[in-house]
Amino acid sequence: MKKLSLLFVSIFIGSMLYAQQTPQLSQFMINDFAVNPAIAGMNDYYQIKTSVRNQWVGIEDAPKTTLLSIYGRTSDHVGLGGTVFNDQVGPTSRAGAALTYAYHLNISQNIKLSLALSGGFSQFKIDKVNWNLANPDDPLMNGGEIVNIVPDATFGLNIYNEDKWYIGASIPQLLNSELTLTGTDTVTLDASLARHMNIMGLYNIKVSHYWGIQPSVLYKSVSDQSQVDIGLKTIYNDKFWMGMDYRNNGDISALLGFYIQDKYMVGYSYDIPNSDINSYTSGSHEFMFGITFRPSTENQIMR
Image 1 (cartoon, rainbow, N blue to C red):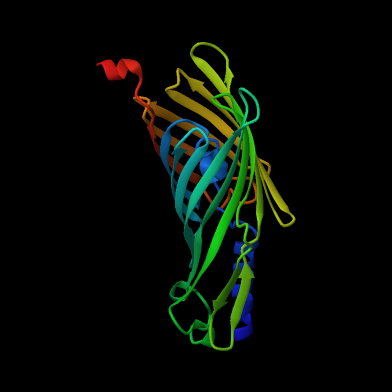
Image 2 (tube, rainbow, N blue to C red; image 1 turned 90 degrees about the horizontal axis):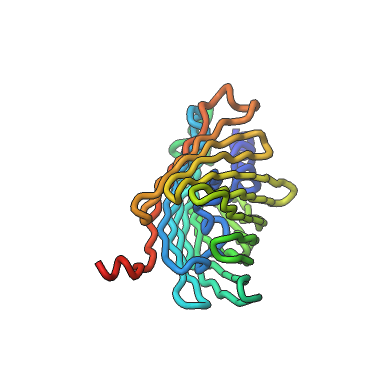
């Protein structure tokens, strides 16, 4: 039974550590700093954004993600930011925090390059109380939780023309930190944080005085696995947006959101799952809320 239990845990940990190690976001084009830290300082104001995602509703122990970030420009060449997150998958969870420093260089009069480094930690936890095993007296079940804290870092770069387009790349889990998840005195589960590669781009197209279109793409790769998200967002009068995101595994997301007084933003996305799992889940829900601290305009100051 111990071997079966160890096999179960190894498969579960393996799937967690080599598949969805980093959080999945359908609104990546809105909460883009969560994907690439080099976004910090691209705009001349600070932003706070939080995303809450319930994935595969209806499936027990499906992933649930909460993410909070703040980022912005401190000077002409420096951007700062920070992120905290929690990703829960059944009896396992990953939480962490990171601080970001980004430096911006002028390539030409309109095009800039940003290089960024984020540093922090990740905490992995396995709650053995919630395991559902055939033999709860298995020695592997001794103890309540397994916790491991490791350093973590992300490198990012971004080339952009402010308010028009950007394209960049990031390498999350840069340190490839080793995890030692000790189950008992005789059983140790070793794993590591695999380096990922993210490539993300977005283009602003002004269709008319009131309408704009934002095509976007996100390519994610780890080991021999990859995923491509293609998004298209339409914006009306800089106050309301709607769109969709197509994932190459067959998932489709509907996007909807709006701005309030040019300061607050609220977004929602609903994922329609692909045919492999749509019999088991009603889909995924993702909520986003943001606050923008834009500099006061001359008209606002004169009021």
